[in-house]
Length: 259
Ligand SMILES: [Zn+2]
Ligand SMILES: [Zn+2]
Image 1 (cartoon, rainbow, N blue to C red):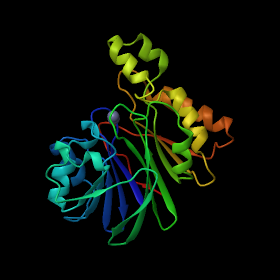
Image 2: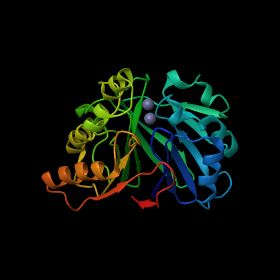
Image 3: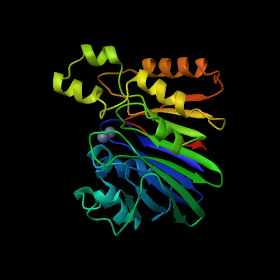
């Protein structure tokens, strides 16, 4: 199972889990042309995509989900309240994800077990996911306003964790955003600061973790260096210097990560 983070950040999020010749996409927040361009580099067969999971309705996560699902004849999975979202209107099929439950996605190459957790974020409902195939687990956790122990418990023990490191507190405070937006981002239903991400990381580091991907970095209120420093400091504090740290990019796909 290979995780390819196609894009991460406020201009668009998409992560592909490749299982054999098939694929499961988490979020499709890029515009159709950019999505097609990144897709073209993957050397996937036509209609390789089987499922599209959508975390929430903000367009940086949902923008192309319906159109892509139609083109690839894939099923869109989302919270029940999201099925009427306009970004999903063109999907050929829908399936409901239930927070707190474990559900099965049938794929050509077997079954993917999905756990969904409800996240504190200002777009209700917002979900985080754990996807498991043949005992290997990926957790994708972005767009949450504060550390959450119940979320960590439900999405436990990933091999690869994509976690939001959205902003540096000092940069946000001193930065160009209007006060209302600063308050939204830093509020309990906004995004995780580097410091809050450290706390969530401490709740989530389990024995299986080998790779931490830092995601959804703000281009204005964070730097890759600050995010990596925060992650590395926390992993050292936890005695887990063995965990590899990678920064997800907004403008290009990462190399595939073997889960
Ligand atoms: Zn977002
Ligand atoms: Zn959001």
